[in-house]
Image (cartoon, rainbow over all chains, first blue to last red; front, side):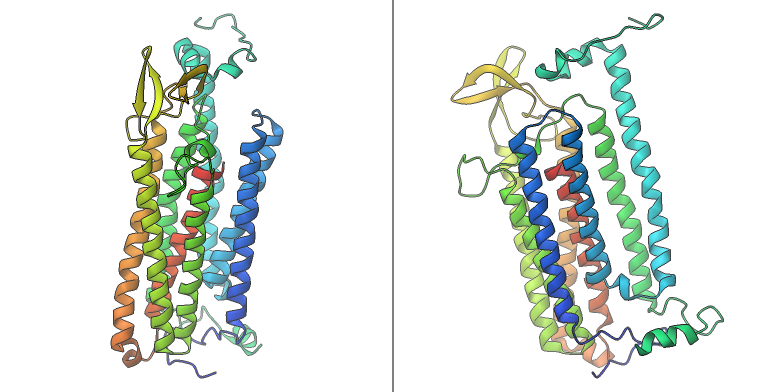
Amino acid sequence: MEHQAVTPEITFPHAPSSDNVKRIWKTFWVLLIITIIELGLGLLLYALNLPDDLRRLLIKGIIIILSLAKAYFIVSIFMHLGDEIRNLIMTIVIPLMLFIWFILAFILDGNSYKNLRNRYDKHFKESTMPANKQQKDTFVIKPGGKE
Amino acid sequence: MATTATTHQTQWWSGGKSPFNVEYGKLMMWYFLMSDAFTFSAFLISYGSIRFSQNYWPNPSVVFNTFPGAGEANLPLAFVSVMTFILIMSSVTMVMAVHEGHHGNRKGVVKWLAWTIVGGFAFLGCQAWEWHHLITGEHAVLVNGKIEEWGQNMTHNPWGSVIEGVVYNGHHVSKPGPVAFGGYFFGITGFHGFHVFSGVIINIIMLVMAQKGVFDRKGHYLMIEKAGLYWHFVDLVWVFVFLCFYLI
């Protein structure tokens, strides 16, 4: 396989193997199948119309994991990050660890804000809570609370 | 494999060579994409934070249930799966263009880049239809005891919880939904759409340069690789936009 002359920064070329095209199409099929499964699960969520319980969370969790798998395939195969040397992979991947904190902190903060508002702002609770949920939630007023 | 053997012998950090074994431009493209990933995730996480702070959030399968030409048929997720397919497909054509570039095959690069541009425009067209459909839609909403017909925009959200037992012109009537929905949807898909648009422009420039033989004279097609990285990143972001707005 003849290779193009490259810049002096590159010590050795990332020899693309001859079955590269096969790998690209294989990745395409993997991505397509994952997307179809995701759509199926999304439609399942719609069809089952589950209340906010564990089963719903489980399906959503599976969809999120499948999306992360898709992201892995795109970055590793299509963007060829998997073919780079380890030094480069690490400088890209390690900063992304911040997302673990980033996502958890802000989602939990939003959730906490909701709980506080439901507790102290009756108008918010009554005007935004869907009807089917309102009867289920019993409200505990703690002594010393503002209400 | 010969390359792995070389890796062990090469003293990457003893000076005289790039420890990352990539040219400067490509490395900087990677770091730009990393910072762009943080920008997008800041938007998406902010959306998640607001969504978790609400008692009610519209169900995406109810909001996005139309298909061009299908009238009022209830087809949840159908159109967005077409958009997703277009973007995955254009990612494949882009990676094929990069692959042809490795072999210095100008005709192949031009062919696959052209298909990628077609895919980009198709995606943008779909998004334009979807936005137009959302903004100009008319959905019955009960506001202060009166029924109004709202589209989805930055200040109105017609997808609140459905009011049981009320029917207007054969359609159910909703309460007003959380206003933040529109801002986040148009803001984030718009920012993504802008990335797609600039990606298409970059690809067109690459196509013209390849056609003129600029890369043949340079002796390498590394520019195509960098444009490809950007294009795949746009596809990558769509995976998460699709996840956050349409699926869950």
